[in-house]
Amino acid sequence: MDSTRIRPFAQLIATAGIFVTLLVMGMQFTVHHFMSKQSLIFPTIILSIVLIYHLLLDRKLITNKNNLLVFGSLLLFAVYYVLNINGNVPLKLEYISYFLIIVLLFTAIVFFKNRIVDKRMWIVFVFLYANVFFLPILLSINNLIAANSNGIIAFLLLFFCLINLNEKNIFLKSLNIYTTILLVITLFTATSRAAMMAFLIVVFVFFTIKYVHKFTFYIVACLILLSPAVTGIYIYLKHTTVGQSLNDLSLQVTSKNFFSGRDTIWSDAVNKVFENGAFWTGLGINMEFQQYGGYLHNLYVQVFYQSGFIGLILVGLLLLSIAIAVGKAKVVDTDFRILSGYLTAILFLQVFEGHLIYRFEIISVLMWIIIAFLIRKSSHKPSVSLPIKAR
Image (tube, rainbow, N blue to C red; front, side, top):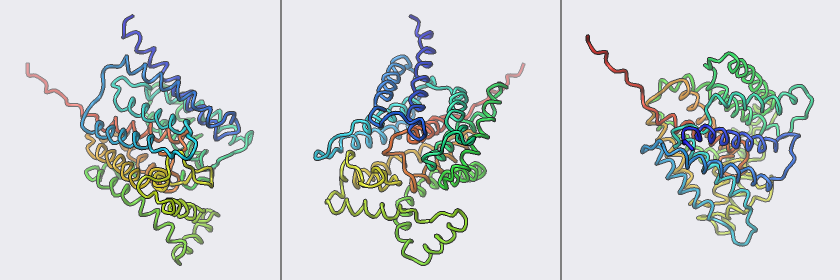
């Protein structure tokens, strides 16, 4: 059978596999929750098979120094992370399967010359997701659960609306505009301060990136290096007058404490690592923090707790390789400006939410998809117009 006929079929299957997996993962944050985390291993296995099948057909790959650097850094961290298992604790395969599927999906988006999922297809998916899960909440048909997570999901899904605002097809354009409005309303009514701040960061970066594009690498690298420091400062501030003033201001503006308890669990988690003499390797990826279902609300504390200082260095190298790739981008168009804003916002979310590593559910997958879009975009070359020959 002709491969040109098989490829569209493979893309259709891959698209369906990705969207079904995201829908199933997204249900975990709604009243439609119907399965345990362990059972999510099955859609991830199906999706991995689909991706491998697509790879066998799509021989045309995008390769350059930048995306190879990112892939190498991701592969190095992934191998260490997956193998860093605590032999004294039962192994939880779902976390390994989630992470491996993210690596596969990220790699496919970055390297496959023929897109697995065309960006227009996201219009229909996000429209369906928003109407099934968010519209009933806004109409008070369903109760809002996991408000913070739902706000972040709305924020991440909004990305796929923003990159399609110039859609020409009137039907798809109408769907996209409607979904954009619905997601913005959801984002600002979900009471997630992190999601609202992330949205404002995207807006700010969108309008400023074209003026500071030459310094993109240095700006992103500083954000990456400062994030662990901000984590430590946040813990320290609670015991200072400045911290009390910030807490009072937060209560006045948002009716919520500035110190939400994260400072306590972060310091407890770090102390636990030192108490067990596990500074270099951490306690193992199958070792969970005792409170909050093991979720530490911070990428750097989470990685240090489970993978130690070695894991922290490797994830730092991965993020810096992404910064290098983004800093060398040649095309600074609307999509790149939106992507840069989302990368900055995702880095911000790693300090107070995490999600890139651990809790591999729809939020993690969407974050990695957006970063993969950015790496792919950064590899684009400016179009060169050929000179008109004189007659």
